Amino acid sequence: MERKAAELVTAAEALHVHGTSHGDHDPRGGDIVVPGGMFTYQIVVRSERVYVVQLTYLGW
Image (cartoon, rainbow, N blue to C red; front, side, top):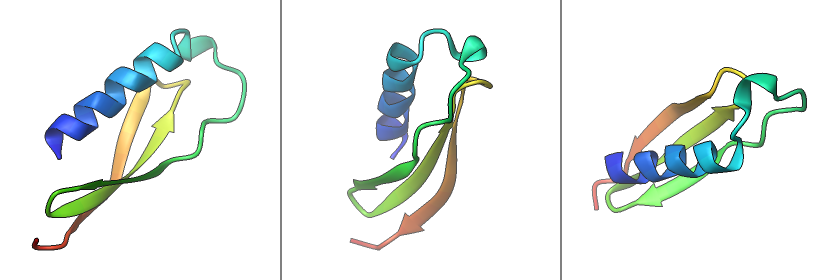
C-alpha cells in the first residue's frame, strides 16, 4: 500500500507542477486496490497534498 501511495504522489507532482497557483477545482479522488485491501484518496492541488481518507483491509 505504501508503494502505491508513493506512486500516486509522484504522479500528482508531475501532473500538477504549479500547485499553489492552481485556480480550478481539485481533481476527483478515487480508490486504489492493492493486495489485501484498498485505499481511498483525495488530491488537493492548491495545498500540494494527497490525502488518504480511508484504508480498507480485506484480509486476502
